[in-house]
Length: 190
Image (cartoon, rainbow, N blue to C red; front, side, top):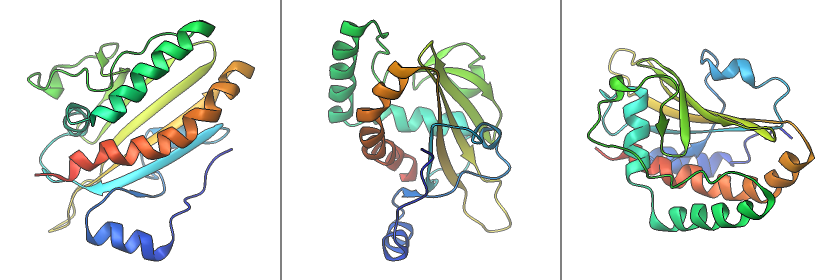
């Protein structure tokens, strides 16, 4: 069920001109690219960084801290509904300490609804693992070329482990396609 970008050329050009998140290909030289073969679902969204000096994890902190309230309402509803079938409460997406330096986070610590797996200046890998799904998220910053702008790409890869995981993904995919670019908009702000 890997998704090929559905964005038309005209829509993509408008998004780039207005520095809005747009669907793209995952960065070829990213760590998450290794997880894509065989994935049940993946997608990637990019935007030019409003603050190009921030490392990848700080870009993620910035995005989560500005999560729109409707997204947190959706997460709260998700947490209530899945509790009836024994899935875990992930908490709120914007549950992030904006005063903590991104370099202070260690693998295994929680940031928002995710656990940090790896953290370098140019890429942070986060995610969640359970018996139903393995979700991995990459926040990747392109290394700036001379006078080039830094592009932040958020890639999500999902490996499904069983039927409940597949069932769970039915409502999640369309919601993810709304939420991911909405949250990423904050990265474009200076």
